Image (cartoon, rainbow, N blue to C red; front, side, top):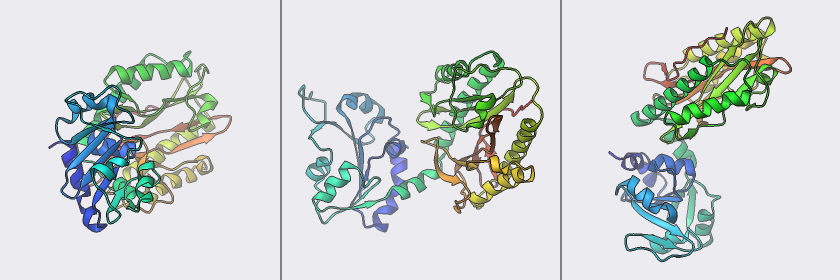
Length: 369
C-alpha cells in the first residue's frame, strides 16, 4: 500500500469527530508525513478519502513520477508563463486558497480541518465565512506512533550516522578543528545515502562542551579534552539523533566524575522506558541520578524528545510532560551536564518503544575514556 493511502486512513475518524467536510494539510512536516514527498504546498483530503496534492509548478513533473498516480496532482503558479503543456495540470491564481473555493467549491456552510489556522489559506477561507478548525494537535498525536516503514527509515538514518561517526573517530580527533570534524561528519553521512543532515552537527570540545547547542568553531581539539559530538542523518525524510562524548587522552577530576554520573543517568533512564510510563517519570529518573552525584544544577535541558519526520517532535520527555508513552513511539534519551568554563558531557540514543519495553535503535558503543 502506498504511503498516501496508508497515512490518510489515520485521519479518517476526524471527519465524524469534528463534523469536517475537508481536511487541509499545509505545514511542511505534515505534508511530508502524508505524502512522502519533499515538495508540497497543500494536501487535500475529502470525506470520500480522495486526495489532491498541490505542488509548485516547477516541481510538477518530478513529483508526478514520485506519486505514481496515488493522488490527484496539481501544479500551482501565480502566472501561466509559459503556457501549460497538454500533460500539465495547472492551477493559476494569486492566492492558493482560491483552489479550495473555486475548484473544491467550499461554501460558508462547510467546516474545514486545517493544521495551521494562521496560514494565508486559513485566513482566506475565514474571510469568506468558511469555518476553520485547527487539527494540528491531532496530526502531531498521530505522527507520534510510527509504522514499520517509518521505523525502518529511522534505522537506516541511524546506520548512516553511526558509520560516519565511526570514520571520524577512527581518523583521530586530536589536532583537528571542530569544523574539520563536522565537515567529515557531513561528508560521511551524505556519501552514505543521507539526503541531508537532520540538524547541524555539534562538535563541542573542551570548554565549548558547556554549551549544549554549540555547533563548531576553529578551536583545535587537544589532549585532555572531552569532545561531545551530536549528529543525525536524514534519510527518506526521516531523522535520527545520537550523541557520544569521548575523551582525548586522560580526563580526571570533576569532569570525569560528571561523565560517569551522566552515563549512569543515561542507562537508568533508558532502562525505565516502556509503554504506559509517563514521560516526566523518565526525566525524573535521569535527574535523580545526577542529583545523587551533585550535578543536577548543571542539567539544564529535558531528557529527550520524539523523533521522526522532524528531529524534535512529540512526545517531550520533560519534567512537565504527563503524557503516557505508547508502543511504536520513537524517542531519545539524552541526559547531560554542562559546567561553564570547564566543559560538558551528553550521551544520547534514539530508542523504539516496544510492547514489552524498549529497543535502542542507536547501537554505537559508548566509550567515554
